[in-house]
Length: 514
Image (tube, rainbow, N blue to C red):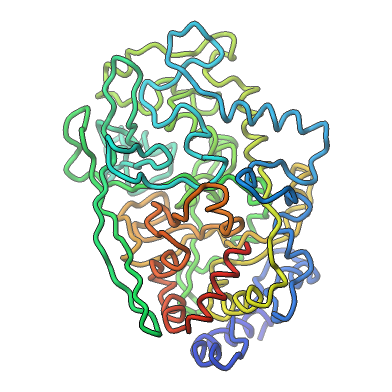
């Protein structure tokens, strides 16, 4: 029997006794190594999950490898350049930061360096959604008492076989959906002067109590979404909505540098090994490469590269054209004729676009080089205990701890050949009905989500000033985020419910150290 298969069978047995093993302190977590194509044994061993929780692992304190930031941990902790960036490249990083923060204005304008915003949009700058390059959050109150600038609402309808819809699908490989006929791919809640906004996200909450071992009750809040003040008439009766907060920007280039085969090695879409954990890759058409590629970014892994994520955000969030997505009217649909008649900011100064090729290069460079901060308290006994619980509970079946990035010359020097600790497999997993949005996206069903990277999660409050987690920020703490897990993660969730208060505190201490 091949060693890989033998280990996986051992793992299934271990899963059956996980709770007993947990209580007895027996290491019952999954230790199987994937069958990397052409893999060399030393690298496979290097990234195998540890069995020793008595001390930190070599390199663990620096989750981004040599690209880790060791700058002071404060509100700017997510805004530093790769730690191994040469001085001469820092200029590009800082100019990219300036464009990331640039406030765009509508056309025509007296300034030709920043016009072209909209006509419909969600924000005037990248930084407005990715506050301090960190995590977005849901509004504290419904419009007009607060806005939803760092949250957006994706829209779609079920696809038909009509030719027009197939054309619309070409960009996104969304086999099951098409843009909402009037409002498009996304609800834009702001518009340039003279044009109505598309509406505003409205949220109501339903309480869901969860009782933990020991008697403590945690009340989860389930959001119920609707759109208020629709500016262009009613939506289609079968319209689907999915609210998403902005993702943290750190480590994006390092995720891009992980070999696709190292990610696909963990895929088991039909759960052929019977361990209850599937892992399905999403694939999407890459604007940057002109081919379908493995999805790595976004809440459902619908964007293949950092550059794809950047050009999509420029277009749908701010209504700006780039060389890769040449739609100067952004997400305006054919039914929004007034929107399509608005002037654009395209001109010779910017290569006939609104975002020039050089601007795009610099924002892409900035985005891929936002460093992951060094970990804190890696040798703290409570953190090491929490790490053991994280592994034994089965969380690493999806939140894969570490990888070695590609070493070939195609990878930028800052991200090349680094041992990194993102705690994700970047695959889709069924998270159950509690977290389902009913919104398919590419290969992702309405209950499947990409495993979110966990690096930097413990600095959310420091950087972003809140502790809101999951795709729509419904969880108000890390414990709530865990308790929202279901589907493939249901067994791990139940093990956390069954923990003692001391064990749960240790688990959270470990997460806060990431």
